[in-house]
Image 1 (cartoon, rainbow, N blue to C red):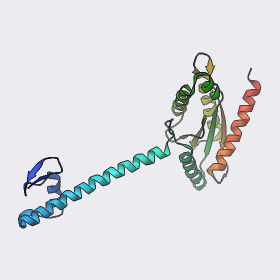
Image 2 (image 1 turned 180 degrees about the horizontal axis):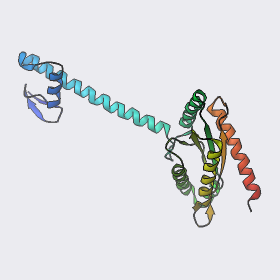
Image 3 (image 1 turned 90 degrees about the vertical axis):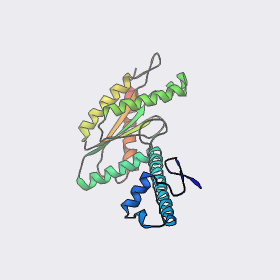
Image 4 (image 1 turned 30 degrees about the vertical axis):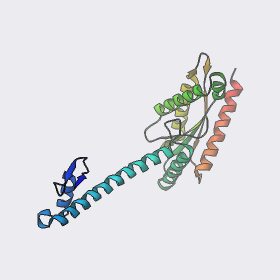
Length: 226
């Protein structure tokens, strides 16, 4: 009777087993020549089944890794979503507390994002968000963590960074985003709040305080905007 081998070839009866299965049998110390035909066939079938299970396990592991990656990342932008961002911030707070390390948080809110959607449509708004992410990612270190916190709100965790350096980073980001032009005459702009970790016990509290700092900046920018 014919049977199908793992590598796709058809083999007759107790013909030569696949190389991978033969290697497996040899690795566990099984010499097929010591057994009768029925036992050899059973060992070959078992080896093939073990290899099949290994392949399926590896495939499931890859699928799980991809699912976890998708669950952590924003559906549109190449950054963390809010849930994953809060998780990472909680970890950084724990490290900062344990090792007395500096830690700062930037909260970025786009100034004229609604006008982009109203003027050019939501597709243009999506493209603008992706461009904003590209700018943010180009301005941060590999150790920093970027997330989308809301529709047009982003957060940046600046690890091992003091308040003065973080403020400089926020100023550079603001300047870049203020120059970002969408369409013919609409400059996007952004308000960026900066806050240093000072014992906040939770990521939610830390983010809320950074959000408040951003609103103070936004109010000041509106006051001087012509």
